[in-house]
Length: 343
Image (cartoon, rainbow, N blue to C red; front, side, top):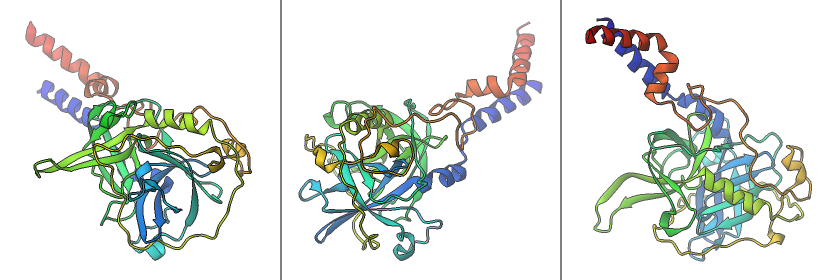
């Protein structure tokens, strides 16, 4: 009997080790997730992005800010911050809008970084994970799925890893069951600590013979994002900051279309005159015209948000580790019982 009790304690401890407080995670991270709206004439699209620096830096997918017809950036780009309460009404939910500048983009890796013009002080940020996570990791996504609520939360687990995705060198991705749809593009894939482990980038929905595909979604690994940002941000030159009137809420438009599984192999980058970031912003101060050269976004500070383990960001304890850390006595009792039966 004692053995079965010990086993029950072990299983319960192992289950608790992988629990995520999704309510707390959403409350902590969702204010740093933005809605991105691109417009060119009568064409427009909606996607998702994440604020990664208090100066107003936003990272997203390149296909969110590119006009599908021309494969060039939209003439107008706007970023909307999350309201205190999402109601489903654009008139209410999209009041906090700002014009955005494109700092750099890469079509092949499907990455882009924007700057919010006239960004308000005290912007919340999403922290990029430094380490990759593995298959089986519990994750969550926040974004704006087509026909769904703005700033929706979905959950699931990483199901696989894929290097050089779509034949693009260095474009390493996770395959995950975490539900994403058009409109989630560019949004964060989060671990239980609230760290961004990837950027949601593509979905598979139908095979070549027409068979429906479910639960196959892809996110670019944060290690790829960090490396790319380090390259492009180090090349930025100063540009006079422009501040325009806040934009009106966007009309009902299609969500940003995820790229096909065989995209055109092409890399694009803006010229120095199209970029701007400030030295003060790097220190968290009020930005002013200048230049900052960084090798990568600042590393996450110690501590965690929302996950029950005491491990470093980006790691989930295995059931065996949970047993040893949180149920050591029960584990010892089980071993003693087993030794008795052997004798």
